[in-house]
Image 1: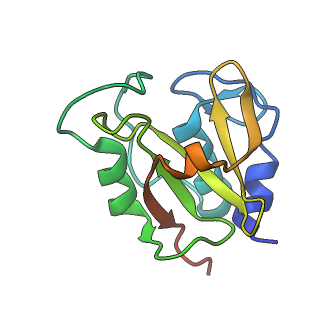
Image 2: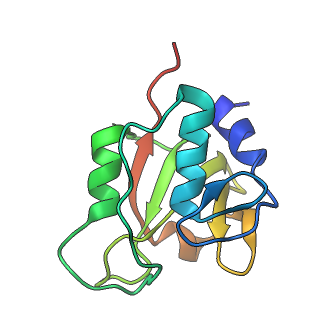
Length: 141
């Protein structure tokens, strides 16, 4: 199993708290990825700016995609541990992310979801249709 996936699964059950990133206490989707980074690599390389939780936000600033492009590696194919970034509406900026946990006929991903906390969900056709980007964590030393 991918070390990223096993680390992400350790966060399952953490409550959803906007802009938080503390395993067991509270996190949002970005906080989950930040927490995995800290567990695997140490301190975060950048301070995160404040952000809204509005999945329908319209604009030109793709901050989540730009941040992922700066700190992660592009992923060209699906594999366990890949960071998925979602655009919830075609005209909205990308505002959600998760970790691909399983591929194959029944793909699954781990994400922090409002009112549910960190869960592992089926990567159903509607979710797959919202994928705007795929990134990988850097190799571990």
